Amino acid sequence: MSEAPALPQGAAQAVPRRLSGRLARFEPVTLLWIALIAILLFLVAFPLGKLLVVSFETRGTGAFTLMNYVSAYGRSRYVDALVNSLILGLVSATMAVVMAVPMAWAVSRTDMPFKGLTWAVVLGAFILPPYLSAVGWILLAGPNSGFLNLAWRWVTGAEGALVNIYSFSGMALVIALNSFPLVFIFVKSALDLVSSEMEDAANILGAGTWTAMRKVSLPLVWPAIVAGFIIVFLEAIALFGTPAIIGIPARINVVTTQLWQFFEYPVRVEVAAAYAMPLLLITAGMIVVQKLMLARKGYVSQTGKGGERRPIKLGPWRWLAFGWCAMVGLMAVIAPLFVLLQASFAKAWGRGLAWDNLTFANYYLLIFEHEMAMTSIWNTIWFSATAATIAVLLALMIAYIVNRRLVPFGEALGFLAMAPFVIPGIVMAIGFYAAYASPPFALYGTATLIILAFAARFLPIAYANSTSAIRAVHPEMEEAARILGSGRLHAIRMVTAPLVKKALLGGWLIVFIVASRELSAAIFLVGPRTRTMSVLLYDLSEAGNFEVLAAFGGLLLLVTMVFVGIGMKLVGRDFMLRRN
Image 1 (cartoon, rainbow, N blue to C red):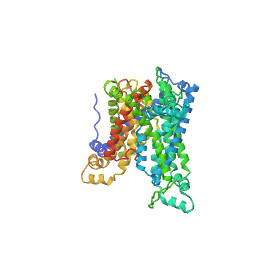
Image 2 (cartoon, helix red, strand yellow; image 1 turned 45 degrees about the horizontal axis):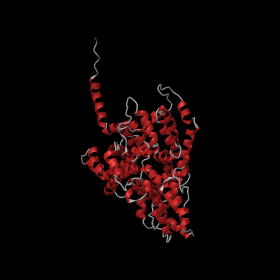
Image 3 (cartoon, rainbow, N blue to C red; image 1 turned 180 degrees about the vertical axis):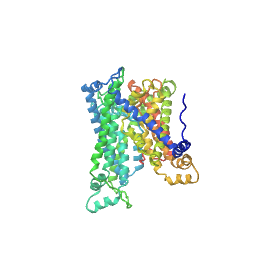
Image 4 (cartoon, rainbow, N blue to C red; image 1 turned 90 degrees about the vertical axis):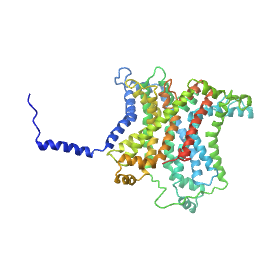
């Protein structure tokens, strides 16, 4: 056997030198970048890619087919559901804008009294889960036994119902009452940047307060109004809880309830995947529409000069402004919470407030006797906490690499981290089901699948929060530590982390709270022993026991308020409504 020819002595010495030079230039952060890409592909890209592939596959054989789309849109009932969702989104978003814009203007620009109370109402509407609000409005405006209709009959002697929540307009109103805080936050934040000098100039030219608001202030914040409208629209068409609780009894079919029917036995995930595709197209289309609407106009409300911002004196009209805010708060928070509280302590909620109707049996049943109640509470807490931890840690690493420009093409990481923002939660849940429910992963019904889906679903919240926190810390602080001999990871741990920990805690709490009330994604992924509180609440609503349902809703709100209180104590009173 012949031996391999030996390398010349100079060449043999050059190879180790080249390797050592490359290793010296290699930074561990490159490995981190590669790992983050892999994680994001696993959490975001693969489920969506699998959803697209499954929509073109024949069940069992995997052969290419278009029959899934024919099945998904071959019946008028399925097409009507899509049309209903689009109309529901438009009506709900319009109602939310009508409610929120006057409130935002009154709080930001005027001397309206009790602004703190208005803020509390907005926070309450933000915290109250949509499906609980829907249950509250069923107790208020059910056509036969709702309190408003009972009072109407008692006062007027009429036989019909004053309002019927089991209607398209009733469903749109409930969604708007839950979604208006999103518009409020966008518009108020934009109005806070508008200088009073612009309104003063309009007043000098003869415009009154209302004319200046209509022709100066609101046009300047038009981008914020459009953004709020689009977010509420997308939220409405992807919502499951309210359309299921109100729409199914009213025989109003929408996309999300139709998708749920595809998951009834036998499960037709390939048809559901095909039926879900238009939601992605609609979402992308709305983003394009927003850009086109704003592309040809300029909106400048803040220049390099400092501008004074004085509250507008409304005189007696300030009470009218407060009356509007109070009316929205009454409908969105106070009235639903009151009837839910009454029902949770009632033997029969229809009997109203009476000592002989008072009982603690509903809470006793849930805490000590119900098979799944306490398990679902524990599941909700640890699923949400783990998902929030994963999302915040992942978002922090991505935000640091992107903002410090540590690797080329780091913006791709930021794009993948924000991608779930434009993906409806119900579509992402079906994508996770298609990707990971079957072998080789076989994760359907497990805690792992739910936690990963929650982490992916709310990663954009954590990433936006982490990016704002990292940008607030100047790189010079880390560089000073490195000049003194500290490594990058040590500098991050000793310098950066202490400066951003408060913001990260706020982001963690927001992700935890929104994950704890998530229904649209959870209902497609839970198993018999991994039910969350939101899913169990929906199960109780199907059983029709509103007393026990209201009591369990009270427990969910108690858990939520505990963590909101922690957030207010550690991060600030407005941590859930702050826009960075």
